[in-house]
Length: 192
Image 1 (tube, rainbow, N blue to C red):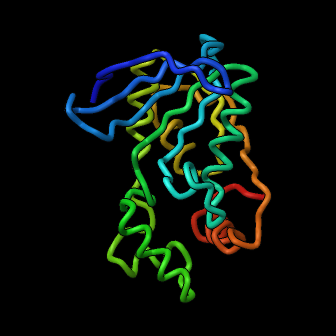
Image 2 (cartoon, helix red, strand yellow; image 1 turned 135 degrees about the vertical axis):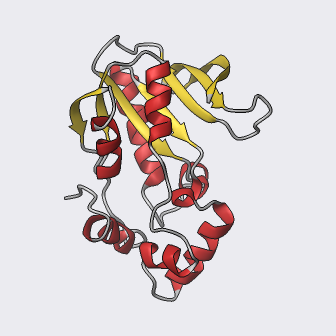
């Protein structure tokens, strides 16, 4: 995987350099790094975010993904930082399977059991990709915006120094309460 192309992208959160990472230059769905114009040289505020079309784009209330992404961008706009946007929809099972998992959740399965019922692992994502992207960007130390212990472990097992975990707590709603409870109780996410 390597940086294939890049461009400056002005947003309401400031100007970001968006860098597309892929193994094939023709890949239509590359992983992305969004590097804010105010990003410091060290102790960089970083959000490793897995794609969630329903939450990120359509602001679904079934999860807190889109809210977490926007909250991360709010914080990064203040002090600079990086969003590593990994194309790992539905905990790595893809959008079609994710929608099937939603159907199972509608009849009583939790998010983990729904994935397993469909023949998948509870979480098929890899954060080694994010580590490789951060290393390519020359990042040596980070402050990680996350509640996910797997992301923390990926950084701790790498050459990148984890200076601080910055909690990313989103207020629960009636629509995502069971989802958040599953993340906390079964997946070990660090939620209040």
